[in-house]
Length: 128
Image (tube, rainbow, N blue to C red; front, side, top):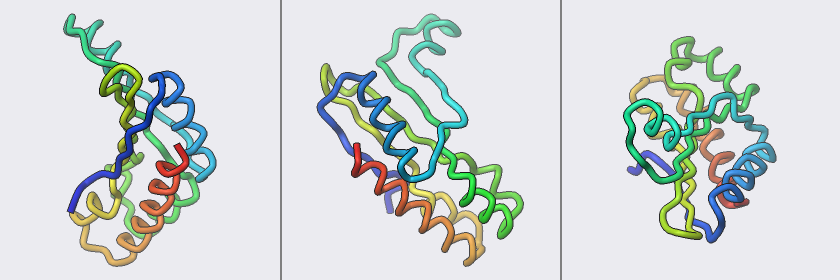
């Protein structure tokens, strides 16, 4: 089982980020955290790296439901979505598969919630 879903699009990096944000929004996710890996690597360790952005995506309703089922699941939230430039004009968007990540927690109710989140993340990727 893969631990992520992905798709590659023909787009400029900035456009792919905007499209990703919009697609997530249409599935009721917001980016509550953001890590610019390229900028962080350059400023912290002096290393040049390709454009690579990690968005911490959260659907508040689904996060609330998951926390009602398993109060420590917050250690695995939010759902990370990576936008990275693969080549000039080619950008890959990858999202965690919450079903795969939740296998570490033996809670059937949580698995059900994770499947619903996975469907929404896959739908967002299809929109990009």
